[in-house]
Amino acid sequence: MEREWLFSLIPLFIGAVCLCFGVYGLRRAGALRRRGVTAQGRIVRHDTMRNDEGATFHYPVAVWTTRDGRTCEHPSRFGRGKVAGAFGVGAAVAVRYDPEDPRRFAIQGWDTTAVDLLFTVLGAVLSAGTSVVLLVRLLTL
Image 1 (cartoon, helix red, strand yellow):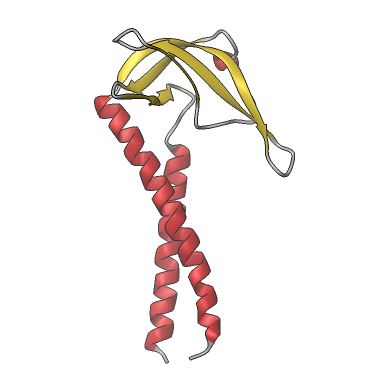
Image 2 (tube, one colour):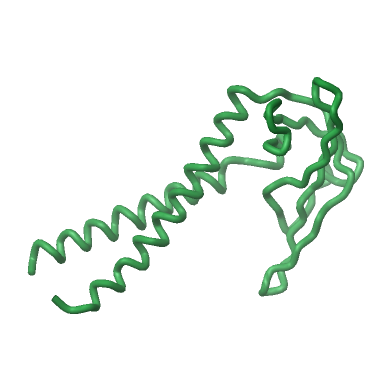
């Protein structure tokens, strides 16, 4: 058996990583939907980051008060290239957070499960496709 088949493990590995990332995000969103508590918050600033290609991403930082009176201030885990008017500095937003760990939160309307769903589908397709190719290759030797 030649060593070239080892290179087909690369898309399998990438697919598995994407699948794990996507499933983690979907499970996290589901847990917030089931056990989360909604609070009124506001956007106090945007953390900006540049990637290697020079694109700028804005991460809104939300402030809210939990039911037990703690003030929380955390940036969203999702950044976007542009900030919509509804999420500008000073905007009132609804925040859904985990009462046991308020660092797990979502800004309603900003944080969506679309990215997690995309990673899940992409990971499943890459993993399943590569597995089928490897299986066919092994069976036809």
